[in-house]
Image (cartoon, rainbow, N blue to C red; front, side, top):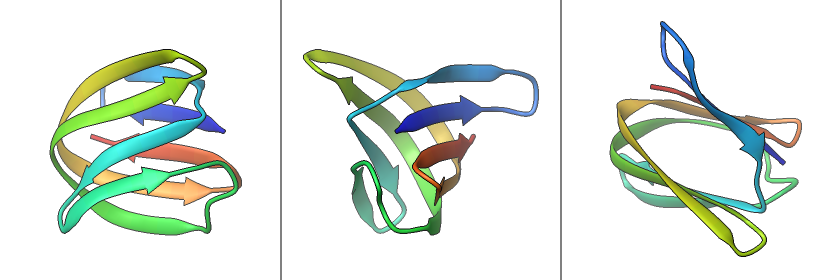
Length: 76
């Protein structure tokens, strides 16, 4: 699946991912490929993305997360 983290000014991250772990307002969200469509708020914290054995951690300060058509978009 594709993960994109964007702000009003720029794209912070864009790439393939096997799993995305995001800080939801009611707890951690784990998103795998072919996840059902979802729209939710994101809390302050770290978004973790894994592709194979590579893991990246991207800090976010709130926003919204959308899952649609095997793509995760975080508007931070």
